[in-house]
Amino acid sequence: MDKDQQLAMVKKVREASMNNVSGSTLQPSYTPQVKQEQHVIPTTYGDAPVTVHIPDREVAHPLPVFVNFHGGGFVMGDPKMDDPWCSVIADRAECIVINVDYVLAPEHKFPAPVYQSYEVVKWISEHAEELHIDAKRIAVGGHSAGGNLAAAICLLNKERGDELNIVYQVLDYAPLDLATDPEQKPQFPEAIPNDISRIFNACYLENPEDARNPLASPVFAPSLTGLPSALVITAERDSLAAETVGYAKQLEEAGVQVTAKQYAGAAHGFTHNGELAVAEDAWHLMSDKLKEAFTAH
Image (cartoon, rainbow, N blue to C red):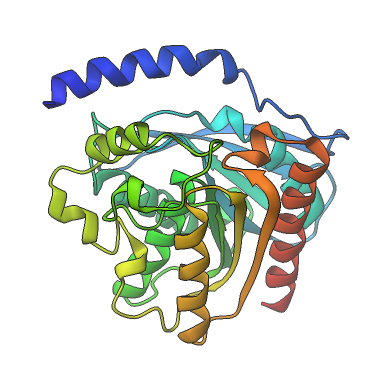
């Protein structure tokens, strides 16, 4: 399948999914006290629109920031899926949350989404005063493909000498091994179909060899020493759970502090499409661990 065929197929998938992008399928059980602003961040890969979620209260000092990346297999998805919950995190963790609309494949293949996402975080750091943000307390995180990007950002930051003060990473049921064929991963009726996973990977990667690049598949990173502390969330009935649990163990073995939680009986995407009580527990866990990390720094 060439790039034009990939694009035609992805456009159909995007159109079919648009009915679920008016916001998260699930909505928080309460209304967070948060205000929102829209910004556009310039990058080498085009402008990145972002929604900034700000606790609606008086503060005398700059707030820490959590930069959020949505899911969608690198080819679809929309930050609007996460906006209601980004407000929950901003309110509960007492931080600013910036929800990013990054470039998608196949129009922008690997490593463009990784590098653009990194540039977004760097821009945020460099414009901290303007955004009333504490640039010494940055966290990154995401859901599914967005979790992959968050892990890659942390690896790239390490490669670049820790130029950004990333103090925490949140990886929510992230695909972290794009090299292993989906059929070789644990199988569940609720999991993403193998053929769909293969299409997503083919659309994202320019060459099959890229699948073993640590910025595409963080499980292949030669060293995880010195990476930020992490919250790793997995769903028991998700074909990606095993690799994500494995990455959490790799982080721990490298001396990184990790909080890992697997949600029993949950499927991929449960924080957006599962049971509200279970999803809300996960979002509150993210909020509380972020607040804990920000307080520690």
